[in-house]
Length: 198
Image (cartoon, rainbow, N blue to C red; front, top):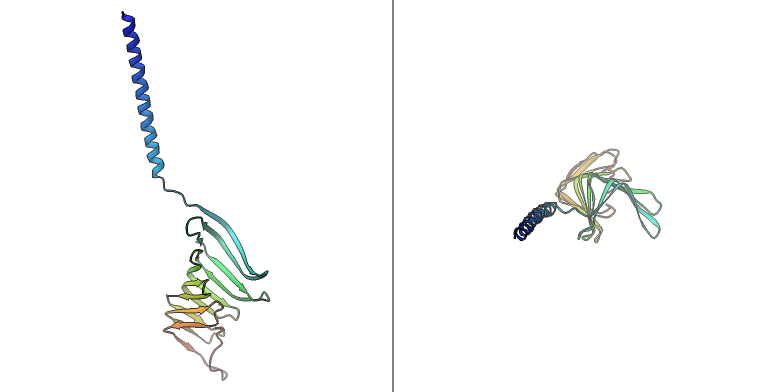
């Protein structure tokens, strides 16, 4: 009669051990699940280094963009970000440079068709005229540049400059509308106004 009891005791002992192992294993799995769930989801982003992009229309080069780093986000926005700066050189139909834009940061918002330049934005025209600001937006739909912070225009012949609280301009910076403009001009050689190129 001792045998059935020993068998039951062994079965109970093994069942208890197996239950503890399973219970302990489930606890470890739950901790792992909690740890994995607490890890922030990684962004789907492509990072490219030393980027050169050539924009063309009808097989004619319109602009060349260079950047040390470009990040393309694969989310609902599909934005492209240039955290280390960007330089865009624009060309006419004869491949002559018409203007360039440089900035320490840029963000291309694909869904909004809007490009945002920030931090030390400099626009240089082919005649040497320079525009400096801390922000610049390009609205691709309306082909217009604009900003909402102070801006300074430096004339190409160094005979003055002009400042404004904000501005808007066409894509070629030919027609520029300024808010609250101020400035000075130095006249010489019977020329009333300096050369601005704007």
